[in-house]
Image (tube, rainbow, N blue to C red):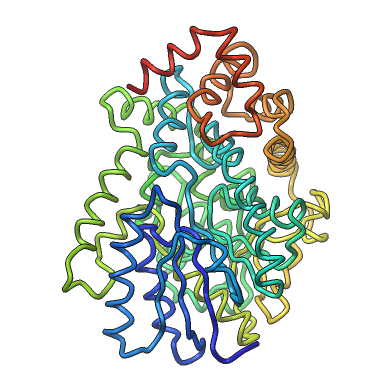
Length: 463
């Protein structure tokens, strides 16, 4: 690779950008950036200008001569890039509000990565990631694509298996918090633990060993979930309600669940918490929008040249820093152990080889080398196979615009009631997001013509 790198950030107007810039600055001695290009769409122009100016201040304060460029021209940003990172949200946070409010109005979880919201986010996002990799094939054919656009697993799978971009790695911040929590509860430094993850993005399990080779997983299950002994976990993402699990179930599983498993092992409790917020006009999406507005007011300060502490309240702490470590490890062939979304290729024998899984891996110059996990016990095996089937159907629907396929995947989701209610929510979300779902234009036109009550419901709910 070159010794003067060009980095392109798709979604450069993101509120997370200061953490990304901070991460690159921390690694300035091992990762020689020359150009940092920040690209966004016209809807995000103002945010791009604000956070782009802050990025320039951060680089200047660090005494670096990087050329930071803001642009609305994606092709200009991609031309000659060595690494491309993606952190965009099609439809901005207003789209997430719709993803949450419409299902919750029917007493159903919206959940923006694995529930109704997550599936519609995939339907909006996958065509865009495929356009990006098409441009990359022409403009930067040797570049690595690091994706942390959610739903990260499905978006990454689309890039690899539908876009043909083999140099794609998906990334998530959730495992970082889980490792921190394990270290805290065992009262050991994180570097003294070996933690192995396996499953899907926001749907994985993990095991933990100490540096003497002792399996500490069962002990951690007791520490985290046994009634009367469980301790608080300060690393739970801000967007996930801290509801409990049935200790006996987790003990029987014998593996530590990720934070998002609350939606599946404690569905009723999570729905109850979400409905409480919805009833007072406080969906998580609306909280995030308010937090983001406050962040951008901070970013406008011409004296601010460092990442503010308030960014940790945004809900995605460590995402950007993890991305910086991943690209640095590829560039330097460091072999850093990370949790990534990549092609399975046999790492998880319970899932097809030609799908994307989230697993622990050693990150090298030729990409992540995954650690084999082996078969899951029956409970997790059934759950992960079900979720992967849902993901693959939704991905195919996003590519083809097949209404029946999309509805099939939607109603396969365990958080969605199959039948008439599921279809009602599905049709309402299609109408709500019609500007960002051109592949479904015929189905949307049919709904608008034949189901005026669906259009009226959406308009009344979102006005």
